[in-house]
Length: 332
Image 1 (cartoon, one colour):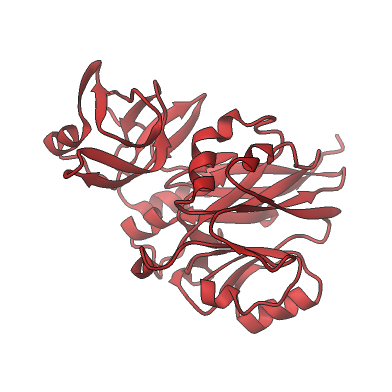
Image 2 (tube, helix red, strand yellow):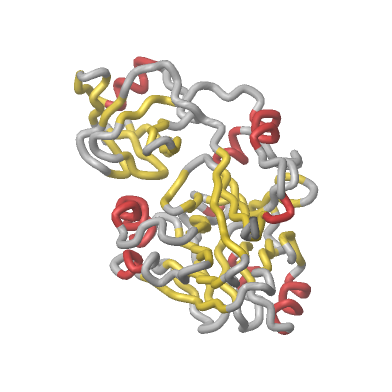
């Protein structure tokens, strides 16, 4: 099973041989691929064998294992995506690609936990993006190798079925814990906030960020039934009096800013899975981790995959590594 950066020529050879593939690459690279059983998303940042890498010419290949008994590709717009869990196999996993800043991205971020059958089957994937030099000039896209379609408005999902002796599990590596600072609560869910309730007192969020001198590289962290979920800062918009996020905050949820991590690469490596790593079928990491921790050229253990504009592990995540493992059911 391949999990590596490949040349366009090598990827086309895999496609022609009938492999089912989950791909990540620059838009111009993906446009050169032949029709076949694959979906792909735009991004030129990767965790490769040699470490963090920016590459517009190669494509990161995640080969769907041959023991997968059946697979299907589905496309969803913002309204249809609520059906994604209903469409999963009873025993399997699903790989999802969502274009950044699209309506389907917003809809998934805000509504995924309320989808029918939420969490029924592992749903893992990422938010497609662009080279940071191309922000505002090029739109993130998704590609469907079967239909030949390219979209900036739909999510593409590769649903995969597993044989009865195997099962899929989904895990995350989140280095961030809630710090000891103020409790922050928002009065409405959304991608930005003009006010925040700080320890019970409402105030301008922009003023709060400035008064406290918050390091906006550190996300807000909430506890979702024991799971730590990050909301990353995108910008502090003083002109319009609001703070903008890479993922939505939720009404009534208690947030605290994350504690400082220190040496990211050291901490990240320490948190990586140590056992059964050969069972990891797919992983992705966040572009903010890549940037803030200066990961280019630095190895992040044995975990490889695209570096993305957001991660999906059942729902939207930020500044998190997500990985899917395929394990054998114990006969004991």
